[in-house]
Length: 152
Image 1 (cartoon, rainbow, N blue to C red):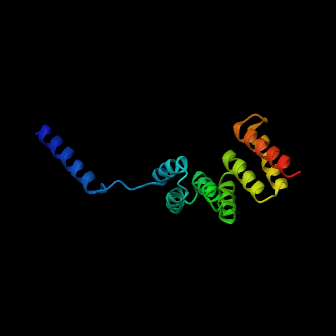
Image 2: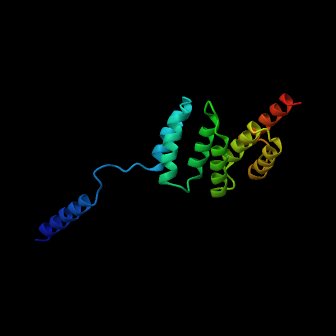
Image 3: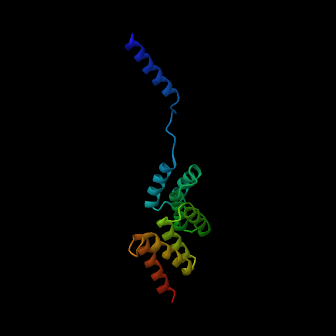
């Protein structure tokens, strides 16, 4: 009798679980971010933007999604700097220590011919990294140096 009751309870709990299981796996922001990263690797900015807009809609507090969306707006053939600045700003508001967002917004400021703002983000990276050798700091430093050399 005990075995019969145990089997009944196991079957009942399994069927209750099955009734609560969605028929399709819901897509989450990380799936869209992964697809966007693939699009970014091939420089398919339109596809990346589409995926990242969905990721941001599903998870509006995801600093990485905002950072990558801003990056994609900035890197497309006709950069949309206002949109890039908007999403970099959101990423930094959500995570003030987001090294990628600091590097990339600095690069966006150089595109906007505003090296003083880029240097503020370089200083933030030095503080966040605790040194001048982290990758994001080094990349932004090179970009600022190149900008200044080209704009003498």
